[in-house]
Image (cartoon, rainbow, N blue to C red):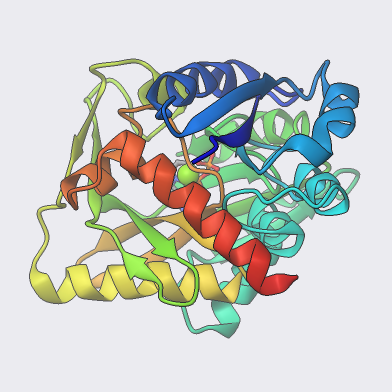
Length: 314
Ligand SMILES: Nc1ncnc2c1ncn2[C@@H]1O[C@H](COP(=O)(O)OP(=O)(O)O)[C@@H](O)[C@H]1O
Ligand SMILES: [Mg+2]
């Protein structure tokens, strides 16, 4: 059988470029070369080549994070070029990338979210109102972002202004939300019509990191990732179900990974990642491995789902 011609997109122009290039290398390594002819494209420099090659590409893997990659823009380009790609389309990608749009849809779907306020650049920051409505500690984050970039945990009123300015340096809108202490878990789901929940992962950064920040995400050894999470069967089922509901509420496709925090028996949904980290040791690949699917097989499955989804839509 002829090999499938796969376009591997990694790099791009977001603040997560380095993360993407690293994932791209590992995905390239893991793809089964007896099945696939793989060509790499960096959207920063190779969009013209991608367009020129489009008719000779069977499927693509978008290994890009953040704006201009995970947000629907590249998905729209690939739709125009009739190239199948793994995961969510334009709509799901754009909704999940915007944490405010996502929260509104989670709320509609009865998923608990931390209480929040929105602040646009130019709005006056009313510190007292913020403290009254949200309480301390609180979390400040850009509406659009990822990898914890621009995010802060604020414990006292006098830290709020600088946290807001830091988040506003990354986006014109920010979220100020209650800090939820508890057990951090993340739930992957995979499938097209029939969505399957992967085992949950429990995320435990070391004591020097008060949350799952950029360093804790990308420096080996800082964070313990325990799979399956050490929570009871009923809560596991509830969180897995929340991950499926979140995926559907945001019109996602193929696969996604939803971050949550468990406080007592209440689970709060933080966000859904439509292109979760894709190194061999990233969270979703770890969950897949725990379910018996190694990294190469996971990539096979994502390619199969992308082509199946594409042909059922056209
Ligand atoms: N409301 C919150 N309460 C407690 N911790 C939070 C809260 N929001 C975010 N965090 C911490 O910050 C990390 C990143 O937040 P998240 O909303 O997942 O954004 P992203 O991963 O896209 O940067 C989470 O994994 C968690 O450790
Ligand atoms: Mg996250």
